[in-house]
Figure 1 (tube, rainbow, N blue to C red):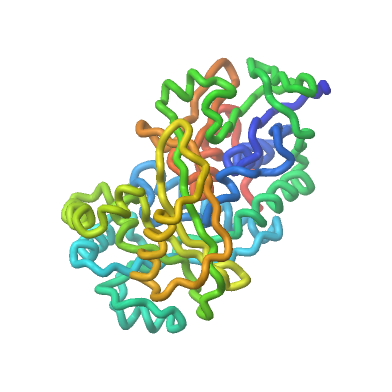
Figure 2: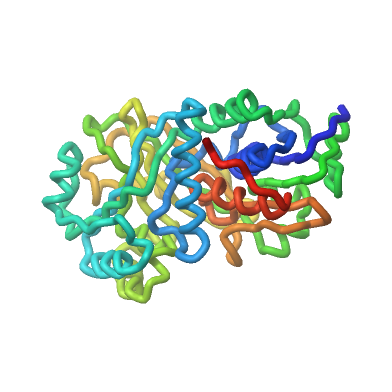
Length: 379
């Protein structure tokens, strides 16, 4: 196979698709190359929760806001259903209320509100919430079903924007103007390598430079609980994990309290996200285990820690009907890598597990800068 394009994107996860979309908006002839015919990694093994509120304040929060706007514009065009909008974060500790109050005093709290327990129940009367001292309500988030939405997004890019998806092939080597694959050579003026958590494939020296490792997570799908919630749900544990909250000085006392009261959850990297699918089932998670090669197994004790936090917030947990693990790239140095490895060849990696939440926003700016061109507005 020999073909010529303006832009080649290696990787068809959400980071790769976001870069392909941005390049197509720049009027470029784009090809996406991957060893698989569809996304099978972290891109579809997540909540589909485009999380804005709580993202790191200075770079991730603006990127997530922009990504949310792009998702909202693209979803109806691609036939992607938005299952839920907004977010609720009920808390049960006075220290957590202090963090939420401090958060609302920053620019990140724009359009968010602090609810009383009565207001929370009035807004979501079907959910059997346990008593809460307060709850943060955000209007900013949206939630799609990843395993359905990502193939629809790829089909839309192909059918409506003319993005070419190469037959499945292994990329052996990239250099300026040239992508060598197991099926032949593809030539492109610009190349974006989006390898996810493939640490030892293309440009392993870059992965090592940024201390990239893997994070393994565990997730569950619970049977329809017989109630519906219009918004995803989080909990106190998220305030100690998400940088937009955790970096606030007021988060110190909460972290100390959680270390005493929920040390097992903290040690397993557990925090709570609950989202609801169209069939009423709940996707619940997750945990975080770091290492170059974390084991591939689902551990019952970790699932139990996740379900314990679910029950502390939402009452009895329905029966699990599906369980899975995922892995994503993780770096202690920064949340994203966008690095020129050689002229006009750039590596792009989300290294914090927030690709679904931020990739559209990050790719838009990066592609515009690399190609030195303006992107068409999303009609």
